[in-house]
Image (cartoon, rainbow, N blue to C red; front, side, top):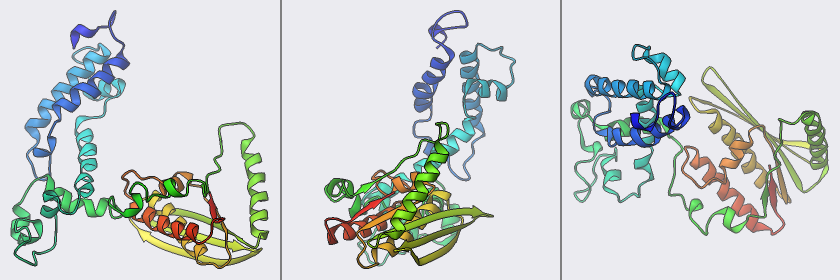
Amino acid sequence: MRLLGNLSQGISPLQKCLLYRCCALPIVLYSFQLWFYNKAPLSYHMKILNKMQRRAAIWILGAFKTSPMEGIEALAGLMPIRFYLQKIAKRSLIRPFKLPDNHILKNLLNDNHPSNKSYNSHNIGSLTNRQRSLTKGHLVDSNIKSYGIFPSFSPLDPEFFPSHRIIDNFSNRFSFNLVNKKEKNQNKICDQELDDMVLRCSSEPHTALVITDASIKNNIATSISHIHSANRPLIKTVHHASFVSSMEAELFAIRCGINQACSINNVSKIVIVTDSIHAAKKIFDCESHPCQIHSATILRELCTFFLSNESNSIEF
């Protein structure tokens, strides 16, 4: 790596950092799950990795060898190696849940007690409490932690299959109105347009105006949705949940609003007003994400809504 550059010539520090993160770290941390798990001795591995990252940070910056580790890591744009391992370990917990139900790893992670002889007798559900306390490994950590971290993960739902997705069959039935808040005086214009749109939609007899919002305080999330139609409020729903992300709370509020709006008779258009357009876009995101159960439920409601009438549509 020293041959690639120094302070006076060669590649820039940004290129050095990119080279280290894209080429060196993936090779060094290949199969790190074999030794980085709960209750595993990590002092020897962390000592080697910290030494490696220190050398990389000094090479990137061209700093003195006596420079403090925390300072040169921050200047080089490198995350401390222990925190980086924790980040990629949490991300890897989602991988077993993307596997089909008949996969051997999925059977090993089954926490239910075996009900018949044909079932895998080595799954986690067959272990006693003492055996569970003594068993170590990445799969055990994944089984313990992932249900709390990814409570709404559903990768194999039919709504995400090609040719069954709404973006394939009803791409012209939904739309997003995006706002560029960086432009000057754009907020006043957007506020005026929003007021005009709310007054217009509220007065239309076949339009349901759904206003959603969510907030989190002291780990308690509150999701609220209001539905208006023909200049009168119809439905108001308030739900509380603990230890959920803001994304999930916003998406749940949108889910409740769409569910209630689809049940109203003679509604051909649904207008969703939300301050989290990113959460609304997650509904149509077919990639793996932790809020897929909410997305699948909304997609099923919208599919039924679109099939009931060719003129039905939704706008965010």
